[in-house]
Length: 120
Image: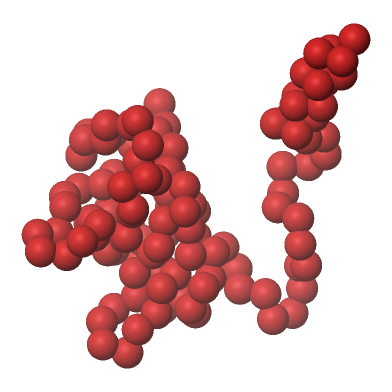
């Protein structure tokens, strides 16, 4: 019985009920979700991002930095090794990157990636 209850609890945590929208405040002052590479360059610091496209290349001599591209353009993304996990990604693979904008005065905006998923 305890095993069944534990499995039910794990199922509820993995597949929560309700809408697919993220929880939190929606209204004035909230940064919109950035969904295009071209929009990253003008986005505010820490604006949430969900980008779909291709990781095109690794940037030499810049740790964990890659060029990401979609139909709107290209942007530099930072992907830590543990984010890749067991996945092997090539420039031909379509990916979804979830993260936030990283702003700096010294360089164009980048995206710090928190999660990565392959898309069919």
